[in-house]
Length: 345
Image (cartoon, rainbow, N blue to C red; front, side, top):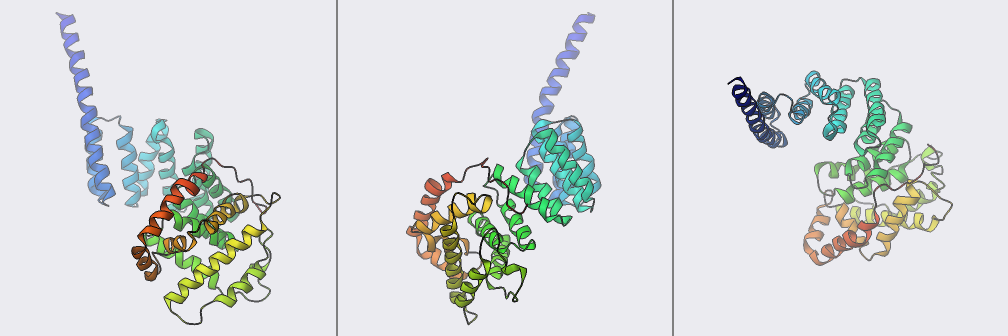
């Protein structure tokens, strides 16, 4: 009789576990859907229900941390992300480190954020998100040299994530490396051409090529072997005299062509680093592709209405450019590419 009771208890226990798992997963999916709509508090209520159904669910615990982070409830973001880290839950370990480090950074505990992310790199190995978040934390701490280093590492690991290129462009700009910043903004816009941050990024990029640089400014000294004074003088002669978007677009296209062509002419086997091993080959191919105007329209659609109008009226060229990039140039942008160290890092 006792054996029968134990068997029934075990069977009941197993059935409860098997039922709680799908119930918990369903609640988590509902929560994620609400989170994606910006309804973070509602999402948290579903994660809490999921944890009642399955108290050991690390997925629900992580999602709680993420939603609390978006609510700027940093204490709870730290609490729940730490649980995932301490549980050593591999599928979400990197993400949990990123949530916790972001919460620390937003609390202005930048030293702790950096220390945590370096610990995560030792524990998880080279991961795009860890290097990206380190780049962001170092940028907030105004350590531009280390920010550049880690953002470049992030890009080496994965060349398809726009955020790394965008932050890289801003850090390079703050480091007075406006040629590389211009190229980084370009590549961000190639990956993400038409969002709110695309418009802001294009405005920053356009300011780079229209800036008034005083004589004897450090911005006119050589950058990675590039004669910036010569390029700047060329750009000044092209600048539009009137505030008209058609003239402004024409200047942007001409300035981009000038910079791309000048760099392609300078490239040789002695030049190393991300500028020469990544950007210059890509933009040289774009120049020679026959789709240069289409490309320039593509990356400027968020900023110039005339580019969007052109884009809508030239679907054949648009389709040709997209096919060329996906089948040709796109395939040459590989992950895990070693660009080497920039000369001034």
